[in-house]
Amino acid sequence: MKDSELHHELMQMIRAQGANLVGVGPVERFKGAPRGHRPEDIVPGAQSVITFGIRIPHLASHWPELGMARDSEILPSENRPEMLQNFFYHTVGYDLINDRLNQIALQVANVLEEAGYRSIFFPATFGASYNRFQELIPGAGFGLFSLRHAAVLSGLAEFGLNNVAVTSKYGPRIRFNAVITAAHFPPTSLLKEKVCLGAECSQCVTECPEGCITLLPTSRDEIFWHSPPARSDVARCRETRKSHYCMGRCIRVCPVGGQ
Ligand code: SF4
Ligand code: SF4
Image (cartoon, rainbow, N blue to C red; front, side):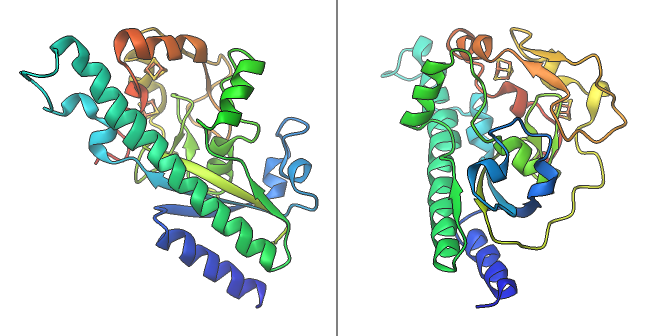
């Protein structure tokens, strides 16, 4: 099979498996990645990063809108926010999507390997390995390969002030995985228009109940954000999920890609 046919087949397969967005980032775009975490550090001879995303259903990210169990005779009202957060945001909007992303990535990597190209992917977060990584490096709020950067550098998104990859169609309410491969495919153009509304909006920053997002002093609104324009206090964010039932407020309030 020619590479052009393989590329076409993969794009179709990824979409047929439920991905809403897919793009290709050539490895040259990742040259600013930390040593040991560049595509070619992970796959010898890496040429391309194929990145794909699945949107979060509206009510999974906007779970506080759900009327479920209001005035329930079974569930005490004080337990309701935790239940909603866990069932809808954490399970439907996070784990199930990541499971599907991982299945797609496995299939893509195996098709590529069958075609003769070394390929691998990292499981999207919340696997046992990721949890172990978090234990080894306390406070780490990153993966060993940045899927947010992969989304931006594959032409699907811009970094937003919330430090999440923001897409024009779904805002930041989408999750990603990526396959790093030795196959060379035509790159997807980087986005040309800014997506995040920047300082004039700042809703993600002002609505964070614990002030976990801090704007970098070098951040300028008029440039396209290929790298995060802010820093997030990941440890504090994690704690906030328990006390404020915040989970995902900084992606929920984003007006981009309103559903
Ligand atoms: S999830 Fe909540 S606590 Fe964490 S950064 Fe976003 S708004 Fe802040
Ligand atoms: S809420 Fe506003 S500032 Fe934050 S990511 Fe969305 S558009 Fe950007």
